[in-house]
Image (cartoon, rainbow over all chains, first blue to last red; front, side, top):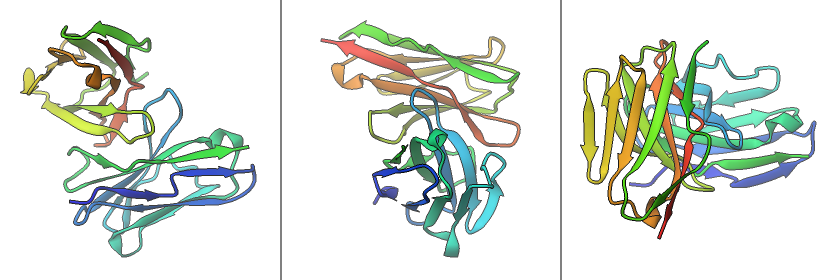
Length: 114
Length: 111
């Protein structure tokens, strides 16, 4: 079984530029999460999708972050414009069950904003 | 306020000994608590899930306990090996059925 795929693995941009991350979850997993993990901290949920609908985006900074999951499979997360404090690892995870089942993570995208 | 606390300092353990990691929480009433392992440059990997009505869960050399009175979970690795060196994260469900994560404890197993 293929795992969660993410790209790119690394990205360096200047502040005020835009960036997009892509995630392909495990086949058949209906629930998809995007997390932000700042160095030395645990993952922080940004947005949760159930199929192609948003379940929770309460912690997503909507003035600059957006995400979509067209057709209920892969997903993209965009930041526009980026700020220095957005430097972090962006993790995508998926699960076959609901929010309380084990989550499968991709390798993450390390974003550096200069 | 709500918070999850894990030892912020690295835990150094001699190979072959038992490593015990702590996860304390306040102002949550989780139905589940999960433990994950994270290696540098990788995403977390699920290890164990324990429910509020379970006192203990085991998987090979791993054991998790969950004390809802103390609001604490302990994670044990017996017969530790250098390959067990990693950061271990605990996560619990909040009232909105989302996982809230601790910052993790870095475990170093010395040969």
